[in-house]
Amino acid sequence: MKAERVELEPRTILGVHEVIAMTAMTDFFGRALATAFAEAGKQGVAPAGPPLALYHGRPTDTADVTAGFPVAEPVTGTTDAVVVTLPGGPAIQTIHTGSYDGLAATYGELMEWVAEQKLEMGEDMWEEYLTDPDSSPDPSTWQTRIVWPLA
Image (cartoon, rainbow, N blue to C red):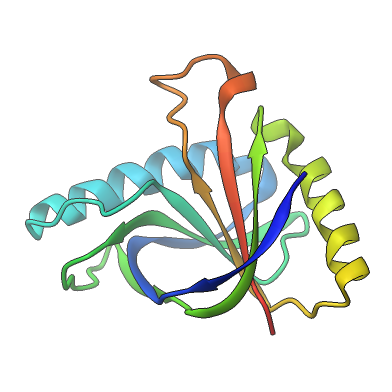
């Protein structure tokens, strides 16, 4: 795992926000991303980057999560989708390559690196899904960028 410090620009996302059981994550993502994509289309806006999941606080057996897409044009929240701003400023990021099942190990390595660097992490963080499982069916090739703003 290679982590790096970066400086982020704020970004707007259009997504679906729920508190869900970790066991319901796959179903939630499918539904949330389809809803966010449809809402963006209704507003005449295209996604401005890969799908992502913004975690509000650290997940336990449940996750407070917003899943959707970044947008570069103004959008309006609806009854089905919310508009959220990803913060700008200093952050760390790393790329996880492989199945989503291996993300926990990458997070463990990242937390060790954070401790060694004596960094303080913010409450929220997000994952950007750089590889589409539909177009890349081999899970060993999937890439997920983990982005965690510094406190």
